[in-house]
Image (cartoon, rainbow, N blue to C red; front, side):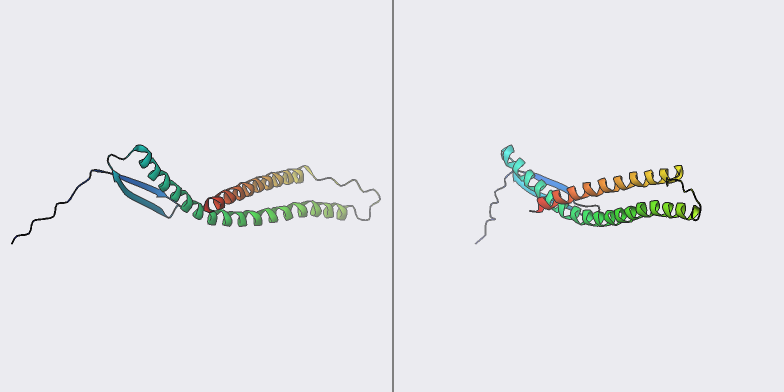
Length: 147
């Protein structure tokens, strides 16, 4: 008695492959197959699902990065704010010391150099605050993607 080999039905398929970077250090490769006669809506639906998974995993990675960035920026903002307060109070103390014991004490005013330094520090502070606000917005957006 001889055995006949089983007949294998073959169906022509389309290979769908999607490479996704979810962070600088990690990526995903998705692969699936769909029948060759599948409607484009079916293929598009599969690709949409793969993109959705990639976006969610990418959001997870971006959350960690944003949290660290926000922490660093907040520390920089606090230090810069303190520096601004001390900058003017130190200049005022120097002014008081300079005119101590003298009859006429001119009104306190920052020197041109001190005003320039203060202006630069204020601009830097505004930039840091804007950067932190942007990072907070990105953090919220990525948290929503995770659900």
